[in-house]
Image (cartoon, rainbow, N blue to C red; front, side):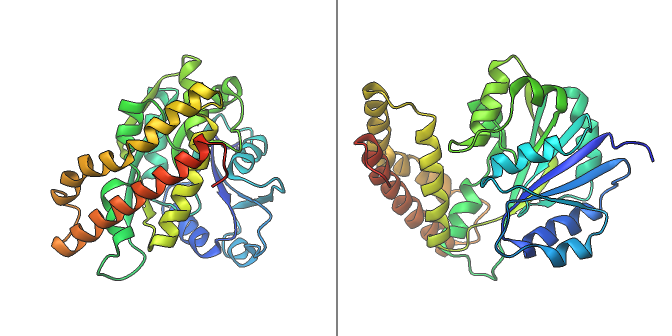
Length: 288
């Protein structure tokens, strides 16, 4: 058999139902000359049933915890020149692989659109409504902020080897793509490269997500007194940012009515105030 010209690398930890959904979506794509690699982070609940259901998918185990280590292991497990990254809880569009091949020659890193869907029946919770408006704005990440996520990422082995692997303990997507851009690699956004991601269904899940992100973002902020002072200023700006973003929520066509919009606004203020508290603690050298 001819060697694969692309590898799809999927980090996974203890979420077999969503992994099965991810692989089911990928199976609707054209996978000729494409290797699909699931790198399991030594899950307490091994994805044995999923592995049996998808015999053409290669499963490997990475004992070092973290998606960064899992993605790096995936790259070492394949010799494919093209690398397509997707997360285990994402659902690829039926033409995602074809589009990834199509856009790969256009830049060194390509990030695509990430749509949000709810896993629970309506009405939306405040967390779901908030995520519908604010989650995964990859076009802004790429074209304004200059980085991309790895839940919908196309790149090459050559670029990966030049940049080096993902680093754990920081905001790994931001860190890796920022290093790539700093090395002179071109990053673009493609609206037609589409995956979907479930919204966080409740406050506990949303809080967990943003606590992790706040820890990771502080990891790349710097730790000098000046860095901490800047972080504290950013923390104090959080309530103001909630006020600034309220019109975006109230005018959003992604929300169904005033009930959802008001729940989203309430969650917006609650989350920004929580982030302010976390960030001030970090600026003072405390754990969150």
